[in-house]
Length: 229
Image 1 (cartoon, rainbow, N blue to C red):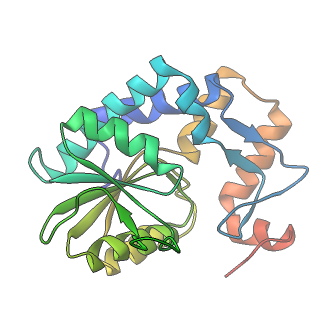
Image 2 (image 1 turned 45 degrees about the vertical axis):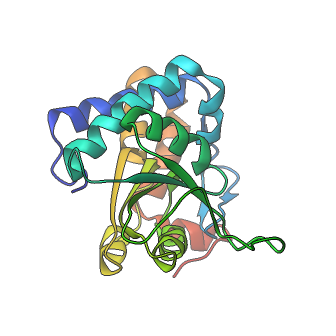
């Protein structure tokens, strides 16, 4: 279950998280100079979810919303552990594990080159049902790498959670479902743009520049030096 058919809680959570991210300065609009994201896409918008770690009251609210949304969508006894993706997902997984009263692990992007050469830190075992947690997702592709590492360790991982999902690249969630991964999230760029416009956080010109990107992200990326396929 995702936000395709939002409940009242999903709608409230989306607006609340969008406002939090805007209020703490985690949202950057720069239509005149593209950001090149880790995924390779060029974007006039950049969101720094890591900034939330420095705002205790804001992050507590985000985790409260996350715990309810994940539990409502997947079930209240759906998981045995929470795993954070290196590195941005680690603090979120710690807070969410605490909120859900579950053990925590974290997953490396690649095995460390010494000692046990472990890919996953923490106690993981055969058949354990693990929720993968990261801060955000653009097209969702990087989540597969972490999920595969969890599955290779013998655990089950069918759900991922991110605070923020771009939700602009067509078919992103369907591609994850092909790998038997359901992704849950709190807010998207559409949510942020709506709150930013309503609250006049940015100029009308900046808002319109971002809207043109959201309407054709692949074309915008291609025209601004990013990937386009």
